[in-house]
Length: 262
Image (cartoon, rainbow, N blue to C red; front, side):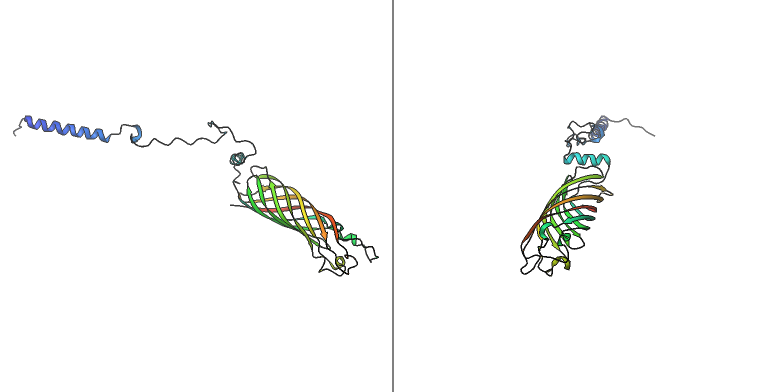
């Protein structure tokens, strides 16, 4: 076997090939740790911690604000979150009065009409509206059924609920319209179709709500309402022959089930 010595031209070719492969390997090797492109955009910074938490330079949100309530809910893992809509059917018992709209007749009668001025009974209601954590703005209809008449009350309400977690107290005011209906024959003095009692309603209420889930809660409310009522005269009626007016009101205690969405 004959081994030839490499010529000068062959050595030159080998040197060029070695230099080319070394340069290619250098180009394929990243210069920065982790394989990042030195000419690409900088990496995203880590997210900032919530205000008031360890590592945050921002102060905690002020007590009573929306951010404070959201942060408190997260800490307690209540799962309630932000809700925009509420629906609350309710039931309870109460006492109501329509005052001097039921007169005491001057002429002798077989019974005293003043006993028809007030009564106790079952209260049914339904509230619906919008909410933003600490406030509810909506409307509510309620009716109380007494032995001699029914009283309906419909109006707007605004409630403040400074709660957190699953437990939410609630305080509110309401303004609306109230009217009587379903008068029994002994109250009407023969003019049930013409007896019209109605007026202005203003009131206040307070209660509590407890969230069983993030969308469903149960609660109770106490309500106190004032009525400014009037009644037009009924021509030819011995009892209601002149206009009447009076102050009335309602006191009630109700339980409710609340649906809060979304």
